[in-house]
Image (tube, rainbow, N blue to C red; front, side):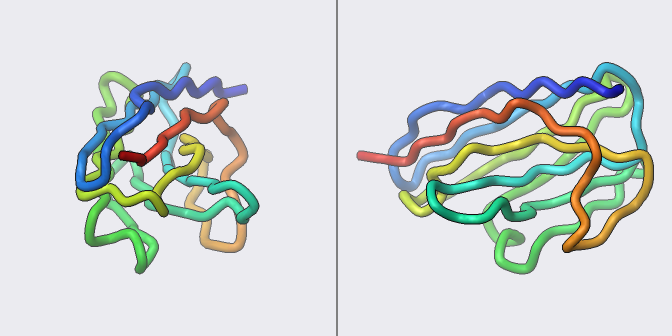
Length: 118
């Protein structure tokens, strides 16, 4: 079982930025970020493989950047130019193999709240 722990969420003003972090209990092939806004389905933001190959959901590519440090078993998500619609719980996820939507990763963190409000 892989444990994932996120950090870095919080309250930010519109137009602001945040950097989320996630650390896994062991090395794993695929790491990803998802988010779930109130009353909405969980949606993919981006994935990144251990070879540092990223994939972004088309609507997320402009303002979000995924990165990874394999030696730390860590994945990061940089969020820029945030808007109130970005308010959501952001989840780190991981899997031992490549997956494609609508499939979802096997392992999940507990989530970190991001609230965008003035």
